Image 1 (spheres, rainbow, N blue to C red):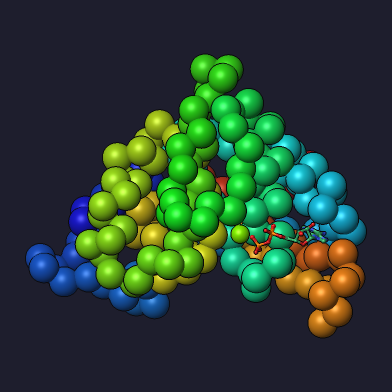
Image 2: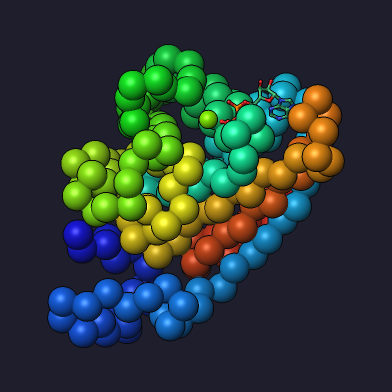
Length: 189
Ligand SMILES: Nc1ncnc2c1ncn2[C@@H]1O[C@H](COP(=O)(O)OP(=O)(O)O)[C@@H](O)[C@H]1O
Ligand SMILES: [Mg+2]
């Protein structure tokens, strides 16, 4: 699958035909990180609503964190903030669900890649590269699977502040990768 070249830097990267250059040897794009603490599921949704204000069509958001961390709670707020149809849930049988906009904005494509193998074929079946330019694509469990959709991406790392699963505190680290997210700190302010 040919990754969409939506950052100017991509034009200068020449890759040998038929080979994929591993992430580690590509020119390292600038990364900006912001760490926040949220103390309840409601605050996590609020963060999603705040994030929705800075998201635009073509944005890829990757959510990382253990089961129950809050990876689905955050996009629930995102969906509300974007004004899309339907509540974001953890789909049991569906891997990707499209939530169309009710306000003529971008659709929200919510992907739970947990059951997806790392294989490109399965990923290609979802046609995320086709939806991405006009949507905000949010992926849970996408590490090592969806990076090549976009050179620019926002990673959201969610950690329980303590090992206690009853503790509602979460440390959320937003890592903006690529030129798109160079102003992440200002955008979230
Ligand atoms: N600060 C918090 N942020 C998000 N969810 C929280 C928080 N504190 C407790 N929870 C609870 O943890 C669970 C998170 O579930 P979910 O978002 O589906 O996680 P994941 O998708 O990462 O498996 C929910 O039951 C939610 O109510
Ligand atoms: Mg989930």
